[in-house]
Image 1 (cartoon, rainbow, N blue to C red):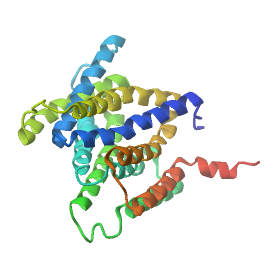
Image 2 (spheres, rainbow, N blue to C red; image 1 turned 180 degrees about the horizontal axis):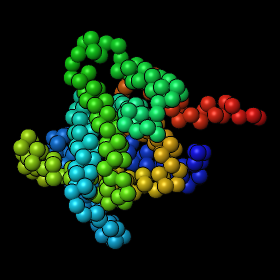
Image 3 (cartoon, one colour; image 1 turned 90 degrees about the vertical axis):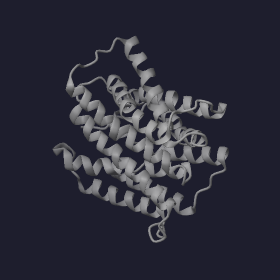
Image 4 (cartoon, helix red, strand yellow; image 1 turned 135 degrees about the horizontal axis):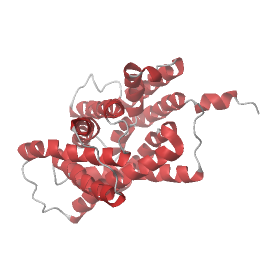
Length: 302
């Protein structure tokens, strides 16, 4: 089976998606100046769900009935929204948003490993194994050799982001097993709705009732990460998936960190250690080996 090629339209959509998701790290960090991590995520999933259900209604998409869809959506809500969003939001209180975006790219590495365990048709080839090892080597380099030796909140925050990416990978397996055949739009709307139902009592218990008396910057950040970086981004995500395939879609994980790093530096004056940049280069190499196209180009006759 040959891999789909990226058309100019697909490249443009992929770049736009990377910009949307690259900006979410800055938007969340801005919101965290006034609201807690759980409340920030609650706004994201609630507003995102409302927007997507509006689109479902407009397009007259069929919605599955029964326990299977509810369980599938609930699992996706936990693994793809609540766990990673909350862990990464808390982590951004202690590490720069650009560093969070770099670690976010490890989702593809965890996905390959867990996919090989869960599915017979996603076996771990030698090339994939090398790519995973190189990629995790880049992550270790980005964290820094002294991070675990001198363990502190910064180290814990980095591990929290990695735990979030592991949760994203679990979500991919859960979605394939539990939501097969469900419209991607309906699945996304159901997932965000389940996230809202599960997170609402937890956020109210831990952080209390939101005051809603936030600054214009905080509201702008909430609107951005809920409507643009969640609802609109999901629509763009599925369009790129249909045009270019999942292999090409993985490239977005390499385009997000430069956007997040640049925005964090320009807006909040964030700086990253040299080890973070070096680690991202190594991680990129690992993902490129996983993707496989560089090796194929090397075999192409001129």
